[in-house]
Image 1 (tube, helix red, strand yellow):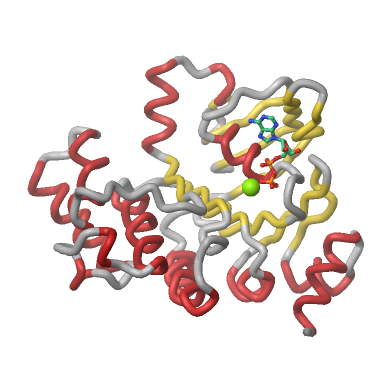
Image 2: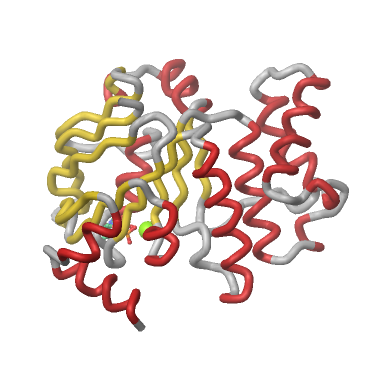
Length: 243
Ligand SMILES: Nc1ncnc2c1ncn2[C@@H]1O[C@H](COP(=O)(O)OP(=O)(O)O)[C@@H](O)[C@H]1O
Ligand SMILES: [Mg+2]
């Protein structure tokens, strides 16, 4: 298993954010993580690459316990996990190409190879022609695709995407979903995508994991989860499918 989250608990003061969450992602698998706002999705993603510590349970990446990792191991872990946020965090004074190059160069990849990998990543998100532009010259959809390319260029084994289309104009959502769908089809990286795009989840995810109030309430192949509607959350998403 590429990722195995095993009974993770996390509280902020008296507020319980995660109440024993377990899930897995296999190599190349795409899992859609869904659930109402505040149910703990972002907290879980932040635990997976050790941006946040948790209180009990364990997270295994490639069978290695993430909680026990020292600083060097955490750096190595983060090189294998691409993170894409709702807000793109591009560097405004750098071109599109340099935004993608930066992580590679900082990671010690030789210049020639870095250029090749950055250009290949930009091509995968259909931005090959825009590499000399600055973020301010791009649409929101293009900016998010640059952020995806930046993560991809590092050739991660797992991509964590936290509501990557939530901050976009509705007309720009499609181009980002299309890029994620193409990525998922190649199976070159495992993907754990937090999203409310239920049609996208139906079409692209190998599995959906539904969370509510800090726990996993349902999981399985999307068509099964949204058909049997075992949980309140599945019911609300299934209603979106017929509307
Ligand atoms: N840094 C924090 N400090 C205190 N409470 C937090 C913090 N981050 C998240 N929470 C709380 O933890 C719960 C889960 O939040 P979050 O993981 O952001 O949910 P989601 O991403 O599903 O909307 C919420 O009740 C939220 O208010
Ligand atoms: Mg969130």
